[in-house]
Amino acid sequence: MKKKLLAVVLAVTCAIGMSACSSSNNQQTSDTTAVDAQVIDEFNIAFAPYDASETMLAETEPLKGLLQEKLLEKGYDVKDINLTVGASYEAVGEALSAGTADAGFISGGTYVLYDEDCDVLLTALRAAYSKDSDNPADWNDGTEGKYTDEMSKYYKSIIIAGPSAKGQELATKVNNGEELTWDDLNSATWSVMSASSASGYIYPSLWLYDNYGKTISDLSNVVQADSYSTSIARLASEQADIMVGFAHMQYKYADQWTSEFGRTEPIWTETNILGVTKGIYNDTICVSKASPIMTDEFKQAFGEAMIEIGETEKGLEIVDKTFSHKGYEWADPSDYDGEREAEKLIVNAE
Image 1 (cartoon, rainbow, N blue to C red):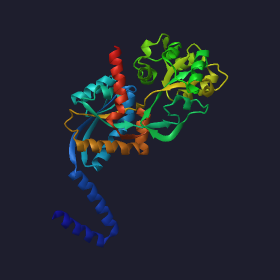
Image 2 (image 1 turned 90 degrees about the vertical axis):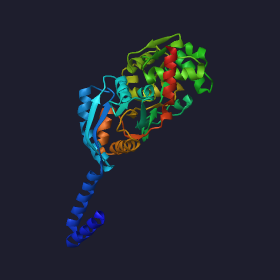
Image 3 (image 1 turned 45 degrees about the vertical axis):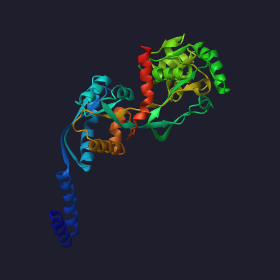
Image 4 (image 1 turned 60 degrees about the horizontal axis):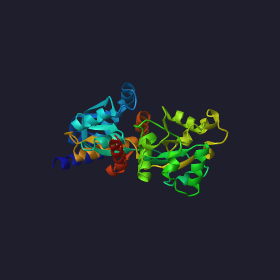
């Protein structure tokens, strides 16, 4: 009855003056949203320590206002949003498990470790790489890889053969369509990253296990690098025959290959891909199962809000600068099954 009466009053107001009608109508929409919105006193969001906590908190401070505005549009009046940075990835996982954090920005690996206590809501987007085939020979056509305008929820790790005699021997077999044997790979010197690196150790180990029932720890000649730059420098100097790393490794080091690492031919012709791992899915936004405010309805609203924020210029600037995210899409828990396999492999190896 009140709404019908209000409609009549507004109609009379419109008859008196169109601009006044417009002003009154806009004010009413805002007031109705505020009045009808469900109040949430506190919303606690924790970030994994991608950078120094002071830096991250300063960069993400504007996110509070953007998120409050979007959630209000969706019927939730969030009075206070607390942003914190965990001491470690595991600390954020523990906070989600306990419900002291309602939502968390964490890696796929952290989500898998704590998936009994949290739900994956969104997967971060990053620019897609032009080379993505599961067949390594497709990468070895001499053309340059590049980032595209498309967005992707995952990236891959690659097993790269260098210009050494052994590296070229293995590359020739792959490019001729021949299957590499375990003895082929075990006869080479590998440069890898630490055992906690997804693209520099874990997923290449999973690739070896899927294809040969072995892991990096079973290889006879392995050297650990302190950085990808060191690893690819070893490849260029022929100290290593094979290295492992993220899919755009050749793109990233194309200039340094000739300018710093002493090679005379382009990286695209002197290196070849021997293997391509499963997709390594990007970082996540997860929500706590123990949080009293994380109802199905609020999770939906929060997810929609973050997707929309990532589509705005201001919002994208924040998440790109802080997390290197290019936006978000709804997550599928099964996307992280590869991570689950990798985690099991690590546990069994220990």
